Every structure is written in C-alpha cells, then in structure tokens.
Length: 188
Image (cartoon, rainbow, N blue to C red; front, top):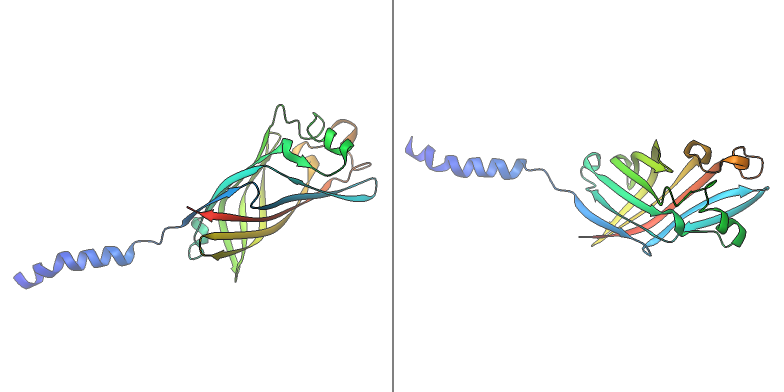
C-alpha cells in the first residue's frame, strides 16, 4: 500500500497535465496589416472603398475554434473611396454619422470550423448603434507568429440606418454592400 501512495501524486499530476485544454493564441490586428474594404453601387456604377484605421484582438485556436472570439473596431471617419463628393458625404449624419457613432464594432462570439482552413466567424456587428447578428465566412491561415484572415460579407446598409433621408431606398445608392476582409494579425 505504501508503494501505491508514492505514485498517486505523480499519477494525479500526469492526469491533470493530459486533461488541460490547449489555450488559444492571442493575435493583434492593427491598421496597415491588410485591407478592410467595402463596395457598393451608386447610380448603376460600382464603387469601392476601404477603412484606413481599425484595430482589434483575435483569440483563436484551430484545434478548438468554437472557444475563440474576436473584437475588431473600425474608425468610421477613415472611410475613403477616392471620390471627393462621396468621401465628403460618408462621415455625415445621413451616412455614417461619425460625430454620434465614431466606430463600428464586429464582435465574434465563436468560430465554426467548415473544413480545412475555412471558418464561419459568428458574432454581432454594430454600426450607428444598431446591433445585428452576422456570419463572416473566411479562411484563416497561421504561419509562425502571423494569422492571416480573408473573407467576404454581404450587408444591407439600411438595416444599420446607413443612408437615411433621401438615401433610404436603393434608388440612387444600392442597399446591398459588400465587405471584404484581408488582414494579418500578429501573435502576442
């Protein structure tokens, strides 16, 4: 019986170590680490733009994607399309209303594995104080201390009160907006 008690602490420790879950890695997203782009249609012509300022954190482990989470904050005043009239209007009350709502937030509650490097980032998108559940389909590749995420999301701008007043209908600017994510986050 004495021999058994000698091994009990070692067996308990080994059991604890083998049952300890793998911890997800933390990744930091910063402006300039990729592209956060959007596209739409105005008077029948497609236009593209991007946000120049954004940051956030991603907690992700490909072995346990369901436990992952992320929070990305976008500076709405950093939107640019290359058209001075459009760029002048976007920060205004009818569109992004950056005085009242300077940021948009995408908060991922979990990642759902779809096979290979494909995932669905399931969470909440907040624009102009309006919260909506969204699913961003993306690929995630990890190489060393870098996580590369690339995906696409279709939105209806009116669901977030973007484009109000004379812009409420899709007569001049289509209601559908595409969002493209192509960013690299660094491990911490």
